[in-house]
Image 1 (tube, protein in one colour):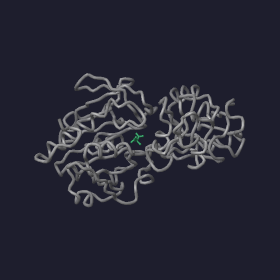
Image 2 (cartoon, helix red, strand yellow):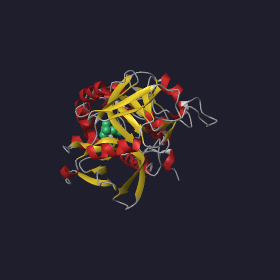
Image 3 (cartoon, protein in one colour):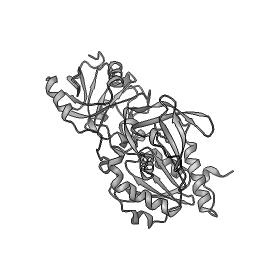
Image 4 (tube, helix red, strand yellow):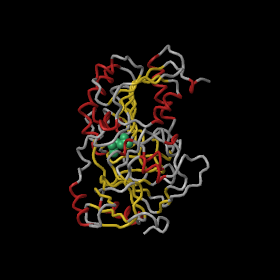
Length: 380
Ligand SMILES: NC(=O)CC[C@H](N)C(=O)O
């Protein structure tokens, strides 16, 4: 039990392999489930909870103290919390940040999040790392662990699950800037800080809902195409994702993909994307840029990855790898002007080592657009 939350009622976390852990309820009273993920970031919990790529997943934070700096609306990456439930070691009802809007407990209540604290998160991370990712259920409505284990066993499996349409916007939106470039952005659950990075570089964005037909996207005649991050199995997003990728390739304009967008771009070149044994989620993942030999400390959030054994080097160059497990983190495409990364150059939360990738894409856009004026970040 977590000594810091004596007023919270009992709650249970049950894993599909039969593991049952007891703790205290945080957020609202209820029952929830999903794939049990863990994130190793030491700060930035609010940005993580609102990252649309986490839709449908239970989030276990490995940093032990969560809640101690409260919440602020400016830290949201989307308009609502996206995680399906929260698991922490030590939950703080009090916060000491003078510019916070309120406590994490209030924020979780406002966003209808069910959570549990007082959990031995270190034990559980080791467990998942040994056995592989699995589903789990959190409940503060029952004391019957076996019933919850059964529920976890029957929860939808992430493989084959289409989730981007649950978090995409309902209508296309133009986001203006002072600069000369027009970027068409496919929203599979785009994080606010990706939008900010483009606007800061002088891009006017037209952001399209995930299922927008390719003809409608192409009719806007963008200078470049961006494919966003997003939740779920990328193979299940192919139905609406690949026609737009293919049409964008035919336009001859540059393409850039982040995370789910990277996976869709790889799939469009017949490079398979597979489920990982355990995903990468945190703000401390080392990535090597194979062109420069430099290492970036990166923010990551993915449970699928391009299959490194199925790379076709007539179609792509591998530009980045993860130094923990050598998995593929970045591609440059040979049959069209395109680049993509599995990780998150927009960070939020996380280090800014990789923000140069937005500049690299803007250089491609600038070269392709030829005579247009330079974007603000690249002016002398
Ligand atoms: N952040 C993302 O875009 C995640 C992509 C995909 N849903 C995965 O888990 O691998």
